[in-house]
Each structure stands twice: as C-alpha cells, then as structure tokens.
Length: 277
Length: 313
Image (cartoon, rainbow over all chains, first blue to last red; front, side, top):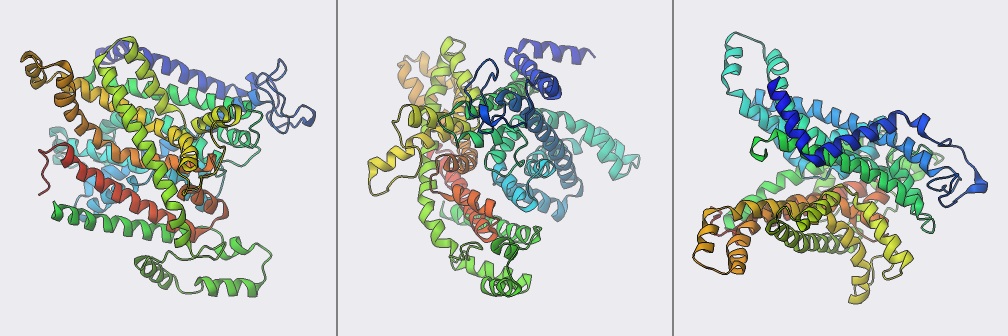
C-alpha cells in the first residue's frame, strides 16, 4: 500500500503526465457522453447548409452534405477510442501468450516463435494493418483485429523479455518444485508478474493505435462512411480544400487524443523505471 | 567486415523468404475470388476461366507458389490482377520517388533533431529546453498525414509557394525539389521528434561522464569538448534509432504519397489495396521487406564508422 501511495505521489509531481491523464479522461468522457454533448444528428443531411463555415449554429462548420462537423467529431471519438483500446487489449493478450509460450517451450519451437516476432517487427504497424484490412474487408471488428494483429509482435517481444528474466527466479523454481502445472504456472504466476511491464507499454501504444486507426480510415480502408470517424472526416476534407475546417478540426481532435495518451504513457514509464525517478 | 556483411545478407534472406511466403498464402486465403474482384460480379464463366488461365490462377496452389518464388528470383514480380501489366517495371519507375522522399525526411529529421537535442541538453531546464520538449512531444503525437494536409493548406493552397500534388519532373531539379519540400518536411517531423529526444538524453548522459569533466578541467574550449568529445559519443546512440526511423518513415511515406498524390510505392499500395489487386500488393510487400532489411544492414554497418571500438568479427 505504501508502495502504491509513493508511486501516486511521484506521478502527481510529473505535470505532463497529470495533464495527459486529465485530457485522456476528458476524451473518454466525451466519447461516452456523445449523444448528450452533440448539438445535431451526426448523419442527418442538410443540403441547403452544405459547406457552411463555422458559425453560431454550426460551431465548426458543416461538411459537403450539410452535416455538423462538431457533432461528427464528438461521435468520431467513439470509433477511435473503441478501436484503440480493443486492439491494444487484443495485442496485449495474444502478445503476452506468444511471448510466455516462447520462453516456456524453448527449443526450436520457441526460437521459431520469436524469430516470427522479429520478422513481423520489420514491418510498420500501418502496413500490416493495411494488408489485414484488405484481406478481411472494412468494418469496426475487422479494424480492431487488423490493428490488434499488428500490435501482437510488439507485446510478444516485451513479454518474452520479462518472462526470460523471471523464469530463473527462486519463486518460479519453487512453484515448479511443488509440481504446479505449466499452464497454471503461466497464468497464475508469470502473467501477473509481467503484466505491469505490459501495461506500461499498452498506455504508450494507445496513441500509436489511434494514429494507425485514423490513418487507415483516411486511406479509405477503415470504417465505411457515413459513420463518422476522424480519419474519414479528414479524407472528406481533402476533397474540399477550399473549406479547410473540414480537415483541420478532426485533426485537432486526433492530436488532443494522441497527446493525452503519449504524455500519460511517458509519465507512467518514467515512474515505472526507477532509474528515471 | 566482409564476412560480417555476407553473414548479415544471408540472415536477411530467410526474412524476405518468410515475408514472401506469408503474404502469398494470406492473399490466397482471403475471402473472395481474385478473378471476380478483378472482372466484376457479372463476368461470364468463359471470361473468368480465360482470366484464370492467363494469370495462372488455375494451377494448383503449390505450383503457383513455386512459380511466384522462381519469378521473384529472376526479378519477375508477376502481373497486376487489374491491369494485367507486369508489376516489376511499374515498381521500378516509382521506387526512386519513395526512396528520395524517405531519405530526405530522415536527413531533415537527423540534422534538425540532433541540433535541437544538443541545444536542449546544454540549456537543460531553461525555456529553450521546455519549448524543444513540447515540439518533440507534439511531433511524436501528430499524425504525419495531418501535418501534410496542414502544410498543403498553408503553403500550397493559401500561399501558393509549392505545388499541390504530383512528384515533379526528375529531369528538372528545381521542379522536382519544389514537389519534394512539403511531403519531406511533413514526414521528417517524426524523425525530428524522436531524434531530439534521443540526442537530448544521450547528451545529458555523456556530459556527466568523467572524460568530459577531465576534458573541461584541462582547459579545453567548450566548443571542442562539445563537438570532439561529447557529440561523437552521442552519435553512436543516435545512429541506433535510425533503423526504427526508417520503418516509421516508410509507413509515413504511404500516407504522404497519398495526401500529395505523389508517385511512389505507398500510393501504389493504397491503390492496389482499394482494388484488391493481390499480386501487386504481394510484390510491393516484398520490395518493402528488401528495403527494410537492407536499410537495417546499412545502419548496423555504420555503427563501426561512428564508433571505432565496434569490430565486426
């Protein structure tokens, strides 16, 4: 308990991290409360007021179908956050399993698993995500799967490193000695001990997955229109360069979200690494 | 040294082979018949059969795979499912655009990033340091395609200093350069941001070393201590992240080629992805794999150049 309290005290001193936490909570609150915060219907067309610049009626202007940009940005946060959290979660679980099994099995199978990680790591997350999206087709579940798959090798490598340094410790030897099964050892003893490290990386990668999600949507490979996503909105924006608000404001939303999780992630990494404290 | 390079090249071969195999089979298990997606749903049976025979899609899978690998070794990357034209020449014609974009972005990031990092470390906890840290934080966070659009809106649409789209004419250096400036700057920011961070922390670490204190105490001018003693050692740390920056910049080049309608591998990939042109996609993936493997090899070899203590035997 004392340990936890001192961690919180260190965290509180890191002003960017606290700001990141506040911004992150704000973005999540906006996503959850979207229907109450939005001023219009995100999908309703209003052709007479198409491409209206920002005004008192439409705070951030309207798009080519007369839809309210502010409302669509608010709703867009839902897809970005959902995809980002779910794909990091997917990468976390599968990657942790992959890395732990890589250490536990050892031998040729273990090295094949880890060599696979090395090969997948040579490719940018965006390109892996893009290929998987083409194979699976568009849609939110596929987007989560595509980005999740791209994140797996990153988590697997951390899990492998953490498990390797843990596997020879006394308590693991003791657990093995009393005859605990490999599966139980993995789930009950190793996983809880490496999940701290993985959680730190997960926070840092939330921002990265938001970037990949918006990038794929921007390329037209994410969620199909008319569902509002930040990437889709910017894509529509570059077709109307004379109405710059269409591309500028959704980008500001992306920037706020990625800044929040980057600052938070940096802060958590700093307090989890005693050398930096 | 030579034996090290040969060994590294031999280690790169399985990587490329695995990528080729993985991409080949992934594209084949993808739902949807490639012939149908190329010809449309209303194509007649005969048209489809003819197409399959022409493209070699009627052969058994293993035969297609062997043919594909054999072709790859001979430098034949197959034909596009959509245009039925050979993919190889198309890739060769746009490859220089992508390489120039990625390398100039890393170069911009490297020069500006290391300079900012050093100045930031020297002025630790002063206003300059704070501003630089904010710049690098924003640089790591901002999506490259968004930055590209902002530059496009500002310096091509509002103030028409640079062209809006295209890759420029390579025979006219000035025109080519003008088309390069905006995408390269937008792509360079990510390298700049990472290199600023790495240089700053490496510089802070080096400056607290004993040999720096000795150099200072024997009365060497600060400039000499900084550039001869500290910076050489910082460079060793900095070069290690260049491999990672290459991967990031290749991903970014896909986005920026799309934003600026610039010819290149990335725009080809996006077009092929939207048309589900599997053969073009698999060829592009293998070219990317080769670029990344070669890039990492060059980075590793350059360690020895920056740090003579490293021996490759």
